[in-house]
Length: 286
Image (tube, rainbow, N blue to C red; front, side, top):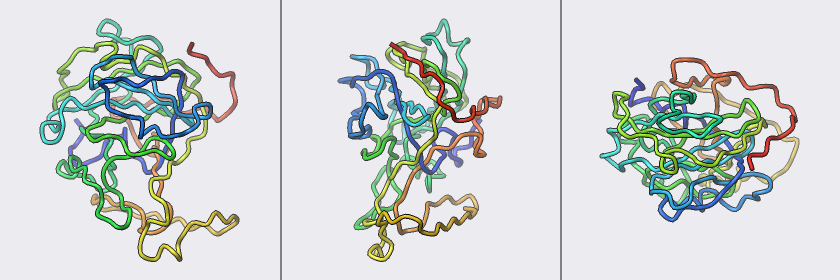
């Protein structure tokens, strides 16, 4: 069982990206239009979700070597703390009848997992979706999953899969209680995708969350100008289980890491390592 005071592997990073093979918005699903942003579909994000699905319809979005799986939690705020989410992936449509053949890629994903987890190490912090007080931008609220996009809606679940092969993949998300017992069946078009997402092996990329011009009172001295060949300073520090984000100045990015970077997926077995970045023939999912 995952601990409630530790962020789960699905959103544990600090910087990321997506891509796809289909796409349309659902009238009843969470409005992800601002979260997808204005990125060029030919170069990146394409949302895949079943038409006319219920409010908790699952969506997939691929970009830069990673698939972003989003869904609406079955309950919001305090009521949502009684639920966890198991994420499955397969190369065939997933239903109750085929679930046993699907790969469990993440178990016990926490409620409101689209929340920025930098300082949300407790249950109370995880359900607090208030934006940071102005005037400066600080880590708070929900994360972003695409460049130049707005944050995910509150009570959105998120899991990020890093591609290890060229594939047309299907996903399902099953809500469980805190003990891991499923509380709903797999219903295609409801909590399982009916259209595959085209996944490609590609370098992962960070997504800008905040701009340096909105970061701290000394921003005129720390503004990112775009000048090249400047020195880079990297500081690694332990949080002592207290969490925390980066410094108060400069551009701020979020990145979704995988197990090759030290993050383990709580499924009881190690996932396959990523293949070396190359340019294989890309799959087409129709």
